Length: 203
Image 1 (cartoon, rainbow, N blue to C red):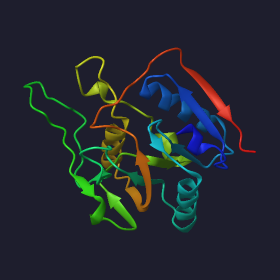
Image 2 (image 1 turned 180 degrees about the vertical axis):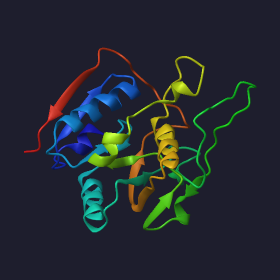
Image 3 (image 1 turned 45 degrees about the vertical axis):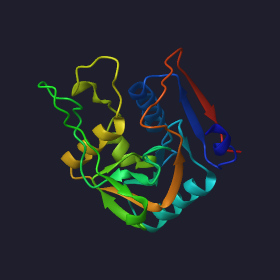
């Protein structure tokens, strides 16, 4: 992913080896403190984002004043390789309720079902792009407030989608901007260590 971002033409701030909520908040706070930036693009480390994707996002925003915009990617490289990271439903922030029943499910769009710009119930935030107005209002939160199974917290995208629904903030996707997601069969390896920030200035 880092190789793909080289020469992208935009400033990059890496938050490495932090839990996902902490990483998100560190990026958000840096963005809010630097008013020269108008939008923050969330780039997870298992998504291949190239210059053409970011250029297409910028072009879309120049034509439309969206506060939230993303592209799309495959759900994973196995069973979900033809499904996109956007859904027809709003996934519940609680994975399993107090009675042991699963509340969260994803009604993914198939890649053959979509075209162009559309509003969705949930987005996995493939290069999720947020205006300053949105970042001032919405922190990045994981699903720990909705679940009790310690050590499995994550799903910042699901919590964000639910928060946007609560405040009637539309989630817009340009489904023509398609990226490669390197996740395998819904599994993700998370390394938590001595977190650090790394800034790369566009030259």
